[in-house]
Each structure stands twice: as C-alpha cells, then as structure tokens.
Length: 116
Image (cartoon, rainbow, N blue to C red; front, side, top):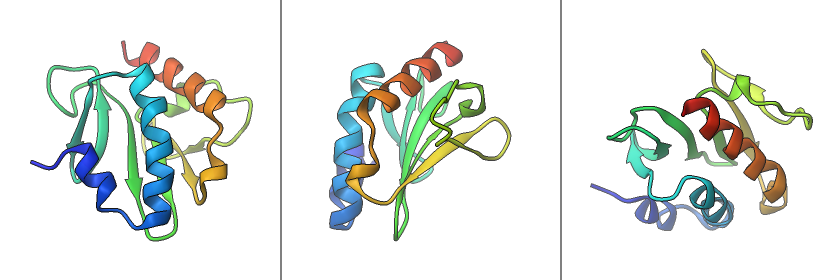
C-alpha cells in the first residue's frame, strides 16, 4: 500500500511543493493519523483509514484540494472554505502562497474537535 510520502513524492513539482507545506501543519494537529484512502491522503481519528475522517489532500492538474469532512461546521471568518457535498468543505490551492499556516491550523483544530 502506498504511503502519504509516496503520494506526495509522485506529484508534479508545483503540487508537491503545496502538499509538502501542508503536511507539517496537518501532522502537528493530527499526528500519526494519516493513510492513503481512495487514492489520496486522508487523516482520520478512527481505528482504520476512513473511520471518523477529518481532512484530506488531493492533487489535481492545476491545484491541490485541502478539504474537511465536516468542513461546513468550521467557523471560517476568511470565507475561503467552499461548501461541498454533504457536510464537506474545501479550499483549492494553486500556489504555495495560498497556504495560510495560522488559518489552516485553526481549521484543523476545529475539524479535529468536531470529529472527536
């Protein structure tokens, strides 16, 4: 089975740079909870990947999506989280400068608390 490191290493340079900057932020709040599930990295609080999932990253040709399963419950004064299917919300990152470490860490802490 592929690891999150394998997934990131296989990305084109621009997406790899974005994902590499996200990983430390995610792993600070959700250490040791990562796995590749349905083809992309997911962080979950349950006993197996995808049980109580909190967040994900998924690379596309022109961006990396950083998403949350219950993202619509996150308080987001920035307005950057876009609602998705069911309770999900995400942000599309086209460049490393799109990453706001303080904002994203706040989202992660909220998402962990919501899922816990």
